[in-house]
Length: 197
Length: 197
Image (cartoon, rainbow over all chains, first blue to last red):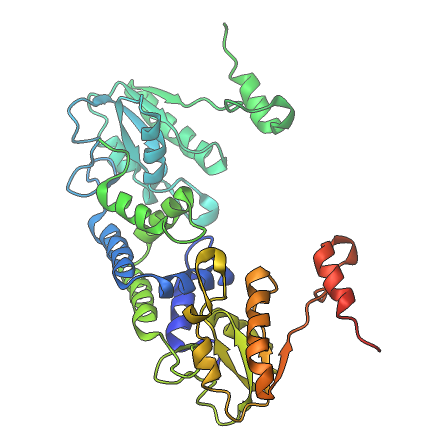
């Protein structure tokens, strides 16, 4: 006989495919689920299925949304003249948590990465170019890594000639950070990005 | 507008109720689930629901099982004359992983804990006593904590007078452990439990 009975092994197997869940935590989660109330397990599964089924991408910006347009794109208060370009819908969530950005977003769903065979045509750059009518500023907020910087550079070369202002969010010492523990690359970016006071 | 759309907030809320899953990891899991294939999400939910619905407790020993009796109780090769008493079905899994125990189990589904209002009648002690006919040895493998030790003592006082051998699994230095880092209580148990070589 195997150590685990079939339904338990199946649950552990399915759970261990989730990110950050190894064999031991999958087993712990499975035990917990067996001990939960029937209704709670059903609620959890309903919530997961609903998240998968109801969440689509906004037809304008590519952000998570339930209907045709996301909350930001359908909000008349948001400034349609400013577009912040990010890699992922989850980056939009992070920006929105800041609560003081009034413009709109454009989600690329990836960054240019020749190493992984992702070229400019594989991410939502065409859709961004199609939206630029009447736009005053494009803020590029891709991550400060090789792919994110290359994508930023590529977009800037495409969009600047159209007479639109292209900016990149600042990179430097995070608030609360300690100079002693900051890596050299961040420090050199912080120096290069210094401003007059 | 709230930062999260409703189905996402609902999934994050349901996931963050799982043990060891905080707000950030729940969000990470939810993002992953949105990115998964439809079929994979359904597979995960089916596995969780099946684990909850199909797994019952064995009518003999109280271990996890799918049918009437668990794999151990229905195996004719297992020695019905030896019963290993554990707290939880998951302890049975741990013991079975060892692969050299040939006897059967009895799962108490708890330990005596007056602090939490759990008395001898609240755990499966009656069921254990009803199984003792023809049993040669009862091995008590409750955890080495206050409740586990109290339960072991209680059971030993009940069962020894019936002329059945009652043993407790050994507590001491774990294999691969280092004397330097072992706590004093374990060390004193290891000294007390020393054997002639």
